[in-house]
Length: 281
Image (cartoon, rainbow, N blue to C red; front, side, top):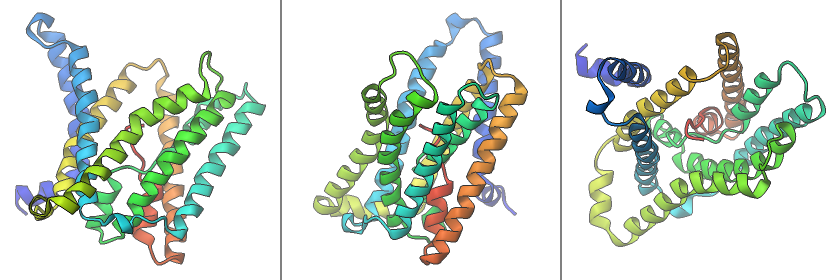
């Protein structure tokens, strides 16, 4: 097997490991080289904060180019997934509201986030490679982001009260961060499909273009996640339990998606829509 083929087959784990090692290597550089010879740490963080959503938007734009807007209709299984994710999130939130002093609070909060967390924008890339229904996945991605934008500000103030945390403030924050990444690529793709056929043909002729943008964005997301873990005050055992709970929640959702998807003959799209979670939120 050639190196190129090996990297292509193992691109996902390679991208994850690369992101983690990139952060650790950057920390090593900053610990040995005087800061005056390097860009500010905060500058690097600010650049990543701009580049990461930009890559996600480009990835969505490329995916939307291959779909007619008329195809973006909610599927029947999508309403079941929304109900399940939203209902479990609300039930867990009510539990914390009624029993706020529970020792399992951080784990329940992790489960809440894992359940309501919207579908990853990269899911369309994976579904296309698996020959699934990309339009259904993209439709659900938009819907679950809207639902999450409403449910999170509605439930979190009761489950985890924070001073000056209002529904409007939280709703606005989520909408500002998430919705432009979904709406702008969709709008731009519609314009290109209608008025720029040559550009459309050129972009869509490049195989796996969105997949390669995803491979660039994933290490950045992993580097940011690694930084958060390295700087947290939570002990290692709690972090391990959070990871375990998150893994279990995702596996359960993959399973639910598979069962519901099989019922509606759309297993690939349904499974990825429910199981793949965005790192950006």
